[in-house]
Image (cartoon, rainbow, N blue to C red; front, side, top):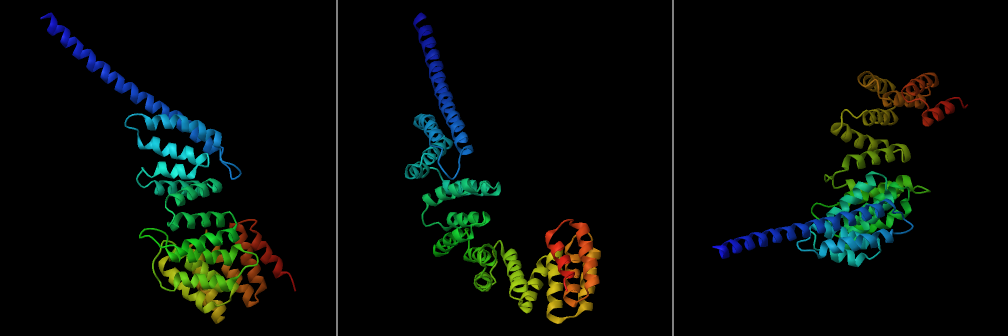
Length: 334
């Protein structure tokens, strides 16, 4: 009887010790991981384009390696270990660690998008660089690196990234050639000095000629319409683009008002322009674009007093707008 009781107690205590040890191992693993992420987050806060925060990466690696080496490590520990290596400039080791995490390259790409949306451009480019290192024939991170540089105003530096991206094979759900051509066009249209409107038009046409749908097709068409109207004075083609856009976006006041101005430039029909823009102003009185484009029409028609009146009305909606001030000053010039 006593022997049975002893065996039962031994069995109970053995099971208890086993579960306590298992629980303790889990606590240690989670603690290592959490401490490692504290150092990772500090390193990312200190990140700049001039240096990698290697010290924080080294500290994080110690703890995250402990978490990875423990029984049944979580994938978050493997992600963190790869990042700690990347922060030390050990990109190949980081990639080797990340290869065990499903779709890690997509996570890195999304982290790049998040940083870019927050205007953390240098950090965004680093996330994209790490994503590209995981899949060297993948165009998306290369394209987004170019896009980030363009958003920073470095169009000349962005061009090689766009060209490299378009040379790689597209994926079924990735960036299309049309999107890349449109962003290349924008660089030549607006970001380079001197600008090259003809080359910009070439790339816009490459993006839009096939009429295939891509996420930014309307934005691309609008940019081409602006180039055609303001830089190349090809009002016929500008009207074609604005008409398509007005069908897609009938509530877009800028599109509809630009269409009215382009039609006036093409036909010199002042009455038609007035009717169209007055109706727009009546329907959207809080938008400046109807007022502004009506002023532009009067200026082109040589009706200086009416142009001045409508520029001044536009200034009531957007006070201090420098382009409007410039237009008013030009009206006073002989």
